[in-house]
Image (cartoon, rainbow, N blue to C red):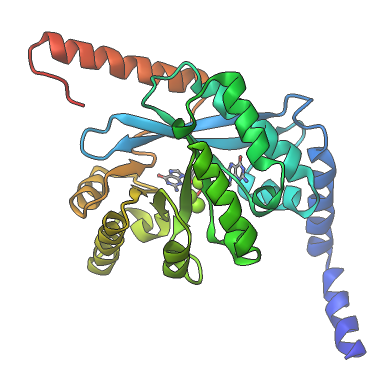
Amino acid sequence: EAKLAGRGRAVEFRPEMKHAFLYRRRLQEDLRGAIERGEMHLAFQPVVDLRTTRTRGFEALLRWRHPEFGAISPAEFIPLAEENAQILEIGRWVIAEAARAARPWPETVFVAVNVSTRQFADGGLVDHIRDVLAETGLAPNRFVVEITETVLIDNDEAALRTMGVLRALGCRVSLDDFGTGYSSLGYLSRFPFDKLKIDRSFLANGRIGENGLAIISTMCTLARRLRLDVVAEGIETEEQRLLVSRAGCGLGQGYLFGRPESAADALLRLQREEVDDRLALRAGGGTVR
Ligand code: C2E
Ligand code: MG
Ligand code: MG
Ligand code: MG
């Protein structure tokens, strides 16, 4: 046993692993104060109506530009921030920043933020969201909280309560990366979600096979039966848009419609669409919306 542990530990000191360990620790240290130093910003990716491609909302995605290492993926640094309590401070900032960005958008356009396990378990989350909505004047039903199954695994009673309070406040809760976890269906039946996002792995590299399509259309039927909105993630091609739309999916997100962009560009996109609508009206064709 001890020998095994010893051998296991010896493996950790392979140079590249030691390097990775030090790198992670360095990032963790540098995360402290990253917001104050202006290294973080949000990027907004459009979520569109799959039939008209009009923007219905945006997902806020966190970006960190490290002064030395450049852009670092949230998939890499969020887990590090989760390990200590830094995610709480970062998460609060994300919520405030996202609501601020959404303020000038049309009233029908939502903003979605990702909330991690530790954040969702934090007692201050709902109060913070309530305060931010009051300060910005953003209608609660335009504010969407995205969580993954992992958020629900360890503390489902508390999570259920938090979801209840959030929904009582008027916010919507979305199940992110649907279909990738251990018991997606179980969570859907036990938790009152408003929305589900089909993970982009089901769209696998541009080609959706027979099986993929069957699964996607079944998920869409399920969502309809449960009266949930459904978003397909990771749509990159026109062919995917058509297939997924015909499979019964109402909303989509992906590079085909837009990459994550600055708040200014998100606003420009909305203004452009509004102009398009007016032109279509004036042309007598009615609106495309
Ligand atoms: P997610 O919430 O599932 O976000 C969708 C991810 O898919 C984003 O990656 C987005 O850029 C990427 N994506 C969107 N469309 C396409 C596409 O057509 N093709 C491909 N290949 N990718 C696409 P990103 O921005 O790197 O974020 C990764 C994950 O990090 C997110 O996955 C989310 O779980 C987490 N994350 C991002 N921002 C935050 C945040 O503010 N707080 C927390 N707790 N987690 C965050
Ligand atoms: Mg998300
Ligand atoms: Mg997702
Ligand atoms: Mg994902």
